[in-house]
Amino acid sequence: MDVSGIETAHAARVAALDPLLPVPPPLAPGTGRLVTVAGGAGIAWSQQTPASDPWSPRRKHLLEVRLADPAAFGDLLDSWFDLIHSSVVPGDLDCAAVVEVPSRDTEGVLALVHRGFTASSVIAVRLPGRGPVVEPSDVVVRPAGPEDLAVVLDLTMAVVEYDAPFGKITPRPEVVPALRSQLAASLGQIWLGCRGDEVLGLLQLQLPPASAWCDRYSAAQGVGYLASLSVRADQRGSGVGSVLVAHAHSLSDEAGVPAVLLHHALPNPRSTPFWYRNGYRPLWTTWLRRPVLR
Image (tube, rainbow, N blue to C red):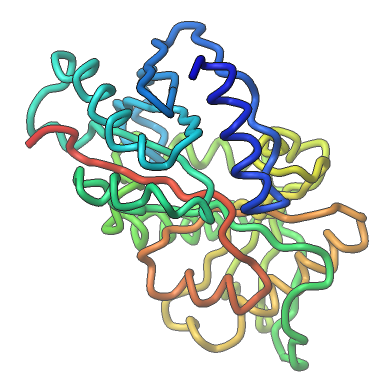
């Protein structure tokens, strides 16, 4: 089967699995390398992220996958490893092999598991109207202002540090000043959950056009993106997060966005049940092998 045939069969397969997945674009080598096996194809490329970015390893080897036959996934992964083997330093913990696949495309999952990959994070999706009714609360939600930047930074760093043990996020000294600048520019997207003058948590919500970058992940276009939720450690489980998320959902539903996406650490014992209780479900799963070689 040629690459075009593989792409066509792959697109038909994933469309049947999940109607919220976008139509996969044709594989475009660009600066990457085309990898092919019987029943599968992919584009392999490498990427280096700045030290100020905590959300992924510094050095990444990525594979964009198309599978006409899920049984071909193992051979495709092996061919990819043959390609990148010589460029990887054994034991480099800030280097990872990264594959992102539709969450419902589970037939090839064992090929990843048998090669040492772990499911590290998910892009989850929520459609309008989904989620529980939140009981009245003494938590008041208000927009963040410039005077709140210090507490916003503290709460955001708490997410970085809490999620770090789950494998994808990496705190580094360069992260704090970079996050401070990013958050200062994004205060208009940030909401605080407060009791009196006390800030208990925050939520950052991007609506179109700021969220246009994540349209590529969904068949729905003009989606929103819930960028961050953080609740102070001593307030977790008290309902602060639910109040903030309900506020975000009211904003997104009123704006008429067709879906809201978010990233969360899949092994996180708090975030995974929380998000699915609030109307989300997995759309894409990111699998990591870190380090690539031991």
